[in-house]
Image (cartoon, rainbow over all chains, first blue to last red; front, side):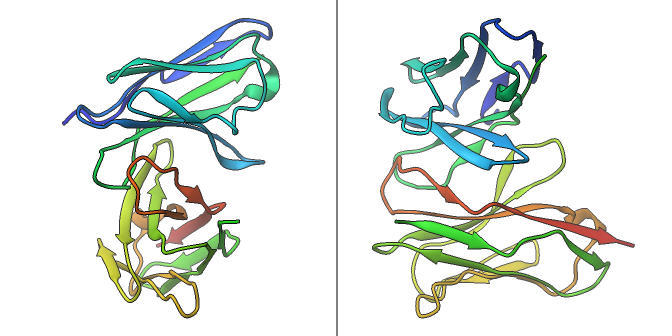
Length: 113
Length: 113
């Protein structure tokens, strides 16, 4: 099994630019989670989906952040416009229907200059 | 509300020392409890889990017992190795598919030879 796949692994951009992070969950998993990790705030849940439907987006920091899951095998997290305080590692995780064990991707390290 | 509290790190040990990382939780209902490990530059990996009171999760020499009476899930290992150096996260979720994990802030373990 390939595991959760995230791309890109590293992203460096300038303030004001649009950033799109991508995630492919494990095949057969129908829940997907986006997390952000920083030294100051630790690991924060941003949003999660069940069966491609957003369930809880209360962790999305502000309107500059948006997430979509157009089908069971793909999700995006978009930041527009990006700001230096968005610099963090963004993780995607997925879980199958009958278990609450989450499987994490390797993360995308975002640096906004 | 539901929350997880871990002992603050960093924890610094010599190889072959005994490890304990404390974790307590607050939850309404009966959650599942998890320990995840994050090695440098990687995503989180499930280390072990327990789904009901008095269950013991174990993996790679690590153990944790679900103690309902003390609302605790302390992580232990009898003899740590340099390769155990990582960040350890305690987490809970409820036994429903597609529910989010609630993480503690993480405890950094550094093991020296």
